[in-house]
View 1 (tube, rainbow, N blue to C red):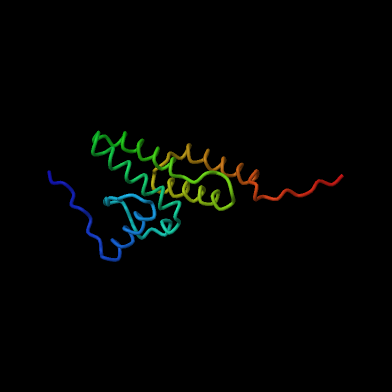
View 2 (view 1 turned 30 degrees about the vertical axis):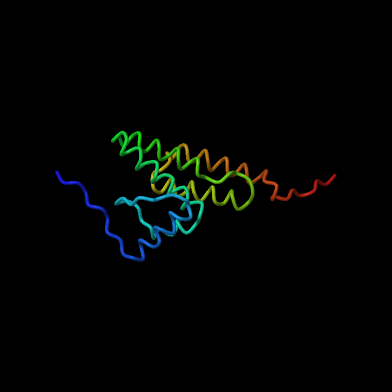
Length: 136
């Protein structure tokens, strides 16, 4: 049984990967599922969450060799890298992170829907949101 070979990247793809890792402040390792050209990764918050997931997942895989624990570790790292739920831009980035997590399977669907609801509530109470004056 042979081990899968390391994915080969073009110089442009490697440059994008290096930029994402630098933005996130970590050394990002490649695997066969990572697409450095994914448009969602143009968003800094999404790139940071994806990088955190990859780093934790890869470390857990090397340590335990269990995909179950690797996914758990990746999900925890992804959640911890998500932006806080205050301010209009942070809330939008939070929603983008949840959406990306759902697409790549980093977070469970049930869990993700709760996070989207939390973002909806946060957007209603955000200090940036202006309340209309009450009429008597």
